[in-house]
Image (cartoon, rainbow, N blue to C red):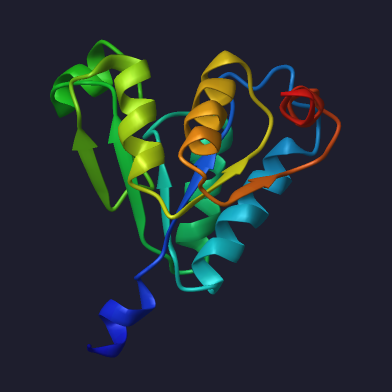
Length: 154
């Protein structure tokens, strides 16, 4: 196996809120740092090709020279941008699933070797339950948001 392929063998998903008003002031920095660490550990950063916390993770990964893979709820790039209002920046590859948010969550989570959770709401909890039931390795960032407490209770 060549070195480049070997370096990108693990895929780590970043799950979190697309709308981050409830996340607290340090959420941006935590998302950036998480993405950087994933890239520095030579793993592919996977996310839902969305805004907010997952986007910040992708931004951090790209700052550190990493590779990013997004799973979109849309059928096409046009739908991704115009209907879902989602970004294409910071993603090396976007897979257009056409399955809406719930289907996208399933594909993204199952395509990853581990999933990291930041601040979030129902979509993040949905991704957590998939990862939990699939017995994926899970990382939960603890900070000034409630998501970590909700996940602990589940």
